[in-house]
Image (cartoon, rainbow, N blue to C red):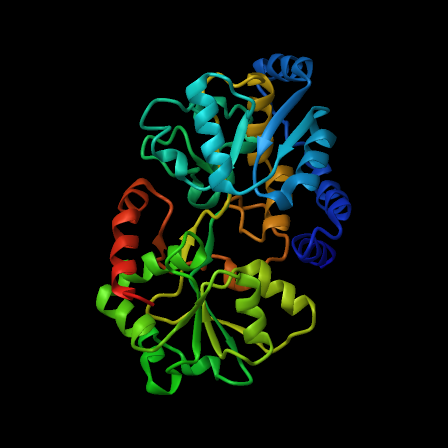
Length: 370
C-alpha cells in the first residue's frame, strides 16, 4: 500500500520522486537484477562504467526517479533529456542522419518504425538482452513484446488498457453504459466531451481504435450527431467531469484521473463497455537505439536495467502504465491492468501503426468542420 501511494504522488506533479526510489529500490534490492549474468556481462559493465554515462530521452516525469535509480543500481550517470516525444524522435532522426548522435536511448512511442527502422538507422536491441532477469519467461505470455515484426528494434516495456470512458457517477449511472451504442441515446446529446480527435494525442489514438472496431458510421453518430465537444487540455477535460460540468468524457488519461481522485473527487468512475472493453497500448514505454550511439556499452547496460525488475518498477510507478513483467505490482488502478480471458484490440504493432494515417484522415473528414 505504501508503494501505491508513492506511485500516485510521483505522477501527480513529481512529489515523492525520492521516496519512490527508496520504496521500489528496497523491494528490488532483495533480488539482484544482475543475478546469473553470463561472463561477458562483466566486460560490458566495466566498459560502460569507463564510458561513465548514458543519455536517455523519455517522458519528462521520469527524469529524477530514472536517473537516481539507474545510478543506484549501476554506478553510471544517466543524463536525461526531457521534452515532447515527437520532438525527441525528430531530434534522434536528425542526429542519426547527420551521424552526430548525442542520444543513446529513446523511450517513447513507435514513430521510429518509419522512417528510421525502414531506412536501417536503428541498432538491434534483441541481441543486447543479456541477463536471465530479462528473459521472455519473466513477462506476460512468456514473451517480450516488440512493435516491429522482426522483434529486434522497438522493445515495449509496458502494456495497459486504454480507450475507457470517464463519467461523473453523480450524474450518470456507470452501469447504464453497457455498450458503446448506449452513448448514442438522445439523453446524452451535448453532454459528452473528448480529447481532440483532430490532433495527435489520446483522443486521436482512441478514435482510431473505435473506427477499427465499429466503423466510420459510428464515429459520425457519436462525435458529430451527439455534438461532442473537443479540447486538447486533458486536465481540463477531467476537471470538468469531476466538477459536474461534463457528465461523460472520452480520451481522458489516467494521470489526470488519478490526480483528481488524489485530490478527493470520489465521483469519478471509469467505464469499460462490454462490447469493446478498451484496447492495449504501450504508451510511452517503447525503447529504441540508433546506430552509432556515443556510449554503446552504457546503452546495453541501460537496456537490460530498464527491462529488469527495478527498472520496470520505477517506470510503472511513475507513468501509471502496467509493466509487461509478471513480478511488478505497484498498486495501479484496476482499469489499467489487462484482464485474463479478455481479447483486446492491440494498437502497438506495425500493421496498426502503418494504417494509422489513413484512419486519422477518415476520422478527420467525418468530423467535417467540427
